[in-house]
Length: 222
Image: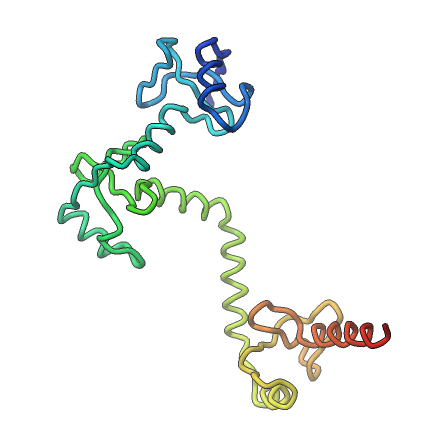
């Protein structure tokens, strides 16, 4: 059963705070809502000041930003468990790219260390970032799989010797092309039922050459 978010009207203190400190948005973009996980009680109102678009507490956001950009940010050293985890799970980053920082707003404590594992460059909790990547993949799963399938089909569409000879005669680098589905103009290569396409973008070669000739003729005529 879904719970409906109740948006309480702003009091004068909240209006003054938004007008003074918030550079983006208007009063219509904020509301007083239920107390956040961190217990930010705005001005003793019994509510947290939140953004309507993201439903996030404004004070939580400002606290996280301050912790990252403040000069006195404390970076605690990693323990052996964190070092082993990074060496095993992170392909492009090393232990030099992480530190132990305050536990994030989502409560991601690494092991029983009392800290969150954070990225030095962004200050973002590693687990929060991983969850965001997973959500993005699940949301766009079909398009991601379709892209992977198209890439595999291109790699598998190997040219036979006749096709290689044809491309070698007309094009300098035949390894940059593949036989794909018949294009919308019906450029059928040697009655194979397929069109020769560029591996880089999948465009039909004959369509591309025809278009270039048309543009060249237009320039000469003018």
